[in-house]
Image (cartoon, rainbow, N blue to C red; front, side, top):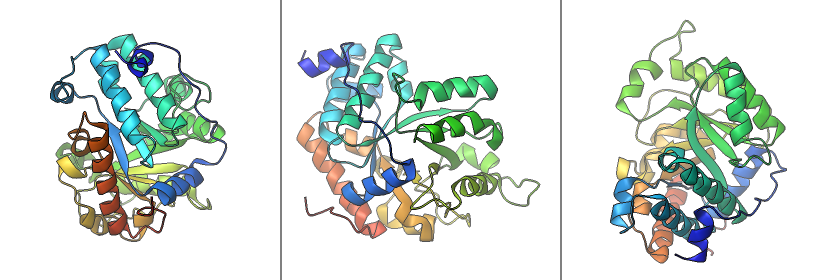
Length: 302
C-alpha cells in the first residue's frame, strides 16, 4: 500500500487552508481560474471493481487517493459523495476526512454531497459537523434538502455564513421522482421548486459577485420556466453518464449560466484508475463546459 493510501486509511491529515473570503466570491474565483466543472468522487462498488480494487476500506482509500491526485489540482470543484464513504463505517469516514482535507489543500472547492435535512438542534448538529471551521469533516460547502420547509435550514445557513461556507439547496433535480414534489404548485402560485429558488434568491440579495446559498438543478431538465437567476452558485449534476450535454445547459439556465458548475462523476471516474486518464477526461469535459458557458478564464492556456 502506498504512503498516500496508508494515510487515507486512518493516518494523520493535513489541515485545509482557511476559508476567509465569502463563499460566493470563492466560487466565482474557482470557476474563473479553473473552468466551470465539478467532478464527483463517488467510490461506487462497481467502480471499485472496475478499478480492480476490493470493496473494503483499503480499496476505498486507494480509490480516493487516486481521484484526489488526478482531480483536485486541476478542477474547480470536487464533490465527494458521503454515502459511499459511510458504507465502510468509521474507517470509511476517516478516508472522507482525509479526502476533504487533501482536496482543499490542492486548491479545489470541496462540496460535500450529504443532502441532509432536519429541524432544530439536529440541523445545528449537521452544521457543526460539515461547515464549522476546524471540524473533522469541514468542507467548503454542503448539499441540503429543503423539503421540511426552507426555514428548517436556518441553523445551517446561519452557521455557514459565520464560517464563510456555502449551502447548496436541492431545487429542481433531474430524478423522475422529484417532479411530483418539486413541480407541484404551492399557495404562492409558484411551483415548490420556484418557492425554494425565491427563498435562495432572497438570501443572496445584494451579494457581490455571488451569494453563499446555491441551488442544485439537474443538467438534463430542459426549459422548465423556472428562474434560476438566484445571484448564487448553481450546481448542475447529470453531465456525461446521466445524459446531460454541455450544449443543453443554456436551455436550462439562460442568463444564470455564468454561475453554473456542471457536475460529472461516472464519465470521469470510468477513465480510472490511470491518473493521467482521469485528469485528461476531466479537462476535456471542463473545456466542453467552458465553451458552452462562454467562460472567460485562463482555461485552455494551461
